[in-house]
Image (cartoon, rainbow, N blue to C red; front, side, top):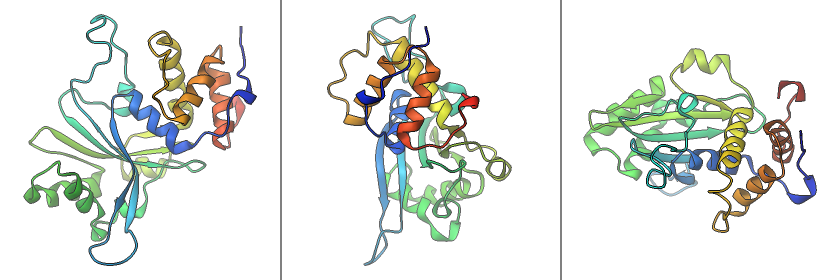
Length: 233
């Protein structure tokens, strides 16, 4: 039975929050709207939509049932089992996946400032790491640390793929499909979500009301304000 969700049970969904919950369900610890401040007086230089960190031994339900660990979106996110993963995520609602200038223009040194602020590398390694992020979108250090850019958008960008082939591009349809599967498959384990924020509870209610992934994805895209072709779902 293809049971459609009831629209009246939800309100608008914030795309950046949907991205937040996708990364959270994949085991990332996050800071939202991470502000890069200027050296001196003045307005902020830029902000990262999401700054996220994931550890290589991440496993949910490891102690409940070692044989039934929740599967993360390993292929799309290019997850590592060897490195601590530091992600700077750019989120676009109705645009193709893209990277804003602050993360691609080395002369602005915004990546330098982010790495210095979070303290994941010794100061003398920041220059090399930032250069790798600017030129390739990723840097892997000898300390077992991977720092990279990830782009979220309505569809993939061929231009971005050509310029930054190592930067994962995540579409809203893919993100929502993963969220529905996680919340549906483990609905018994995720029954009580009172501590989740309002957007997390809304997406959980929407998933509970959807008998299949397709109506959930379509309704969530509508509530996010994402323009899409239903034939693509």
